[in-house]
Amino acid sequence: MTTKREITVTVNGQQYRSEVEPRMLLVHYLRDVLDLTGTHIGCDTSQCGACTVLLNGEAVKSCTVLAVQADGCEVTTIEGLAPEGQLHPLQEGFWEKHGLQCGFCTPGMIMAAYQLLKTNPNPSEDEIRKGLEGNICRCTGYQNIVRAVQYAAEKLQAGASQPVGASE
Image 1: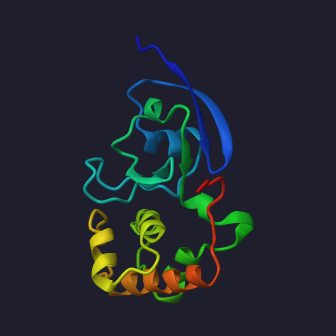
Image 2: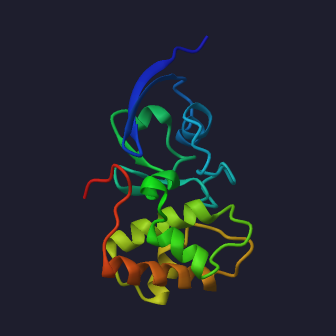
């Protein structure tokens, strides 16, 4: 018999109260309880980065965080980057610069790139590659992903865009 715990989490600017098992991973909470399926489950071992989200503004692999650890926190998922149906410059960059093929790694790549651009708004190619090290793409060869991040960096420098519910 498992005792459930009540948690309160703000996800993409909306507050949720839920009862969860203490062992439930944040990625499963987002996908299975909140039906936010943009966060992907790739490996369950923190190797691929497909499950990357922002937790209190920091990129984390949500397969390594328990939902109860997010109690009282703010989570931003890939769905939270596109306010009112508009694309975030990173999402636009992946589209315009062909930074995706199958798209499975894309949400995690974009969230990791968001963290990178938050701390380094004008990264070099090497800095982009280093910033995305924890995210694996099995399709693209990464060159177009780097171009997509460079595209977004230029767009963001021209006019900032914040994810829904983000506080800087």
